[in-house]
Length: 334
Image (cartoon, rainbow, N blue to C red; front, side):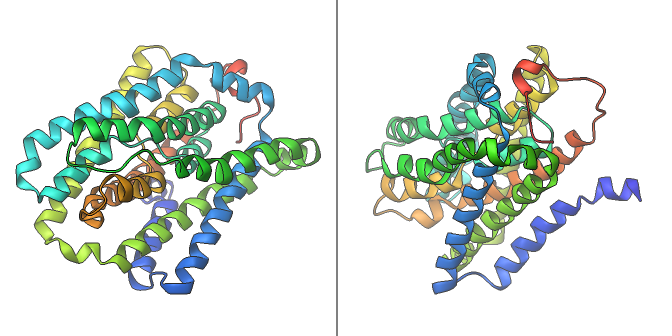
């Protein structure tokens, strides 16, 4: 049974079931609005709980860990674009023009926030550093992504969206600050009930998957491609994700990072954010087939969640024998 559980991850099955439900019963109309609000509330609750659990010293340790932050930044805004350019140069001629643009656009986006931190927590990694890396990536991405798009995709139009900064602040930073304020009241309770944060971790990701896949089903973007096109985009996404994750894992170990730091680097540095990517695409590619341009991003988002669910489970099963440096992992969620 233990071997079977390793081969069939229950959380991966839950992700697959969520996608299946979204395909059969996508959120439409008023239900789509309700799903969006519930997802937003779940993510806000997740960051409130993180704020209540993490000590200010642990947060500062994450911010001051410049080597780790540099690795994630380099992966997100240097390694990914280079791989995206290479893949586009080799395979772009086999794809519809909008899909080829979307594949390169995917590589220019910032990291995700909620799933990066959630999977780092599940894997028992350096959560404060992951929180800082993912949040900083999104804030920088508001400026860097449009600049990269303008430079590498001259056909794009539009400008830099300040709304993304507001969304990040309201959905992530504000709940986190409120959690920090509530820490003296509920911090000890949350430390005694670590599974509560874990349930919110997993639940928030399932809600994001359902809302995102529902939006794609309602927009009908899946029906605009044949099976061969869809299969090629799927394989190229796996190729890009695999290349980045393998590179980050090897580099983290060669550079002497702890296992907790490696987990944060791999999960934060290999992600691309759909929550910020789709609104940016609507502005940067105004008047173009945005639904097709964001298709590689939507597929990549699903793939990275499935892969990271399995990888986080494997990381979490490692022995407890090797303690993490106190400076960088103080009061991490279990």
